[in-house]
Length: 399
Image (cartoon, rainbow, N blue to C red):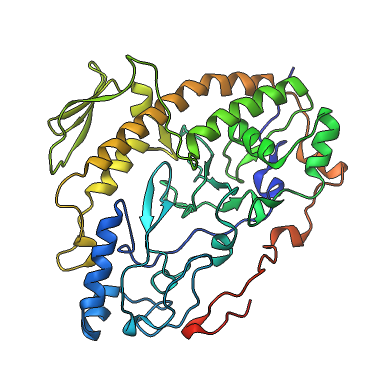
């Protein structure tokens, strides 16, 4: 039977209508791959006098030493202008900096040009985020990625992706799903369909297009079950917010075969030996599929390594970084190789699932069922405040 074409499938933008633009940091130094460097950067900043702070901050139109802003929701921190800032660094938090790259961020609203407070209000236990990846014609890799930690929405293609929380309120409340869609799917499939089911299905079948990420649906309960089970496996690999660590069977697990150097400069791949070469350091086995795994036309492993090798200008806060390769980065690299290997192994199953789809749940059908078009209110954030938020100078924020 014919499959659903891209043009027939509904847009993710309609299925999960509330989205938020990517974070706009405005400066690089409040984010990095290790938390200790961020604390050291903050300490250097508060030790400086006013002129020194001015130079170190990298002021923008949105943030200067004298900008007054509210706290980031969910985080306690000073709201006095940075010119008068003192005390220890706010505890860095994990964020997703582009695909598969968890880094650290100083959660201080005074340092981030556009932090998207509406995202911080709904982050936390029970929340998941989807991020559309930049579409590159002819490239391989997933069209959308999931995260349990707050993503910044960066895409290797240089095109920022919209961030779509799965829930509109904290604590996993009020699904960010087109009104009526879950009930419609439940009726068509003859089973209860929840928001997490829809997210899992999306991870399994979503395809990129120039118009945006499209999600073909199905009326076949068996195909739906295959898709949600497969998508659940993908979700477990992409969004490991519960601390779970994926493992490959013995004999296929990547190990450090030759120690990584203290200050590596080059990453390469030895296809014959299935080895990742970090200068003279070697990690194996690394399947070719893991090395070639791309998002938006960019190899994930190369991007991950390059970001850790970036050296800031002398005298800048970005120049404060580990003096040698931390052991933690080696552990993270081994885990990333494992994740990419396991995801690559699921790609044939995703292709089989796509072949099994028949026309159902197209945009036209959803319009006929009254699910589309989506009401404008569903594209706006919910009112989530059940407590006061501190505004500039310790005043309550008016939301």
